[in-house]
Picture (cartoon, rainbow, N blue to C red):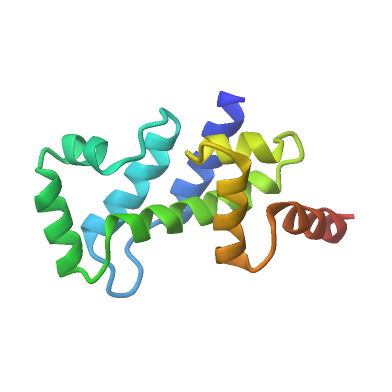
Length: 132
């Protein structure tokens, strides 16, 4: 399962490429770092702050200056990776939830619905039907 996770994370990292319009280097770096830290189960502000060698407060301040927040970027990375993971038939929804750092399937389902207006199972079914 770890191999599958790293394959998806690497694809996601490659898709990030360079900065998007108006996006700060810190935001790009943070997205990459979060995708990497999810593999270790450490996608949190403290772990990121340690890796960047700044205080958590400094990280928050820099993100605020970019008109974003740690939680917003974490949710964006999770939403992007969720779609990638759900397209892999080998991964169960609970495994996807755990890979993204959710403690249970219910929390993941709630988050997924907020991102895509449908539960993960319905999204997966839609993808599988489109691929047939």
